[in-house]
Amino acid sequence: MTKILDEVLAANRAYAATFGDKGKLAMPPARRFAILTCMDARLDPAKLAGLAEGDAHVIRNAGGRASDDAIRSLVISYKLLGTREWFVIHHTNCGMETFTDEVMRGLLAQSLETAALDAGGWHDAGRGPGASEGEFVDWLTIRNQVESVVTDVRRIRSHPLVPSTIPVYGYIYEVGTGRLVEVPEATVRLRNRRPEGRGQKDRRGHARRAV
Ligand code: ZN
Image (cartoon, rainbow, N blue to C red):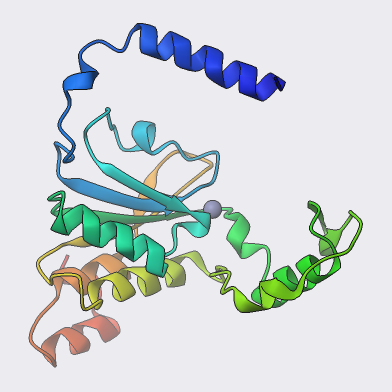
C-alpha cells in the first residue's frame, strides 16, 4: 500500500466513524445550486462557499472551464436534480494560464512524464516516447481570468439545453486571500438579459450600471 493510499483510507475510516445521519440525505442538492470550478488543490469549494454534504453540486475540471462535459453535468444538475443557480469560479494563479495548446501538445509529443516549469516556461524533464494524441484535445487554457469567466458564463447561458431562467454568476477566487471577487461583465450579462438589442447595448460600456 502506498503512503497516500494508506492515509486516504485512514482518513475515510475516521470520517465514516462520525458520519452521523448524513446517510439520510436526499440526492438533490438541498440548497439547489451548483458550482463549476477549477480542480486546483488550493480551492476547497466546501470551505470557500460554506457547503456541507448534501448542499450543492460541485463540478470541477482543469480551469473550471465550461467544457462540453461540464455543461453535461450542469444540465443534469438542473434538469434532473433541481439546481436553480449556478456559479462559475475561476481563480488567480491558475495553472491553465501557464501554457497554450501548442505548448501542451509539444510537451506530450516529447514525453508523457511530468514536465517542469521554470522562468523560461514548461520543459520536458522526462524521457520519451511521447504521443501525438494531444493534437486532438482542446486543452481549454486561460489567457486572462476575466475573459475566461466571461466566455464560460456566456457559453453556458447561450447553450440550447440551458433555460434562460438560470442565473449564472461569474467569480474569480483569489488564492492569496480566499476571497471571491465578482466578474461584473459575466454576471451583468445575465442580469441584463433582455430582448435582443437593449442587452447588447448595456454590455458595451455600462456593465456595472445594472448590477
Ligand atoms: Zn486552476
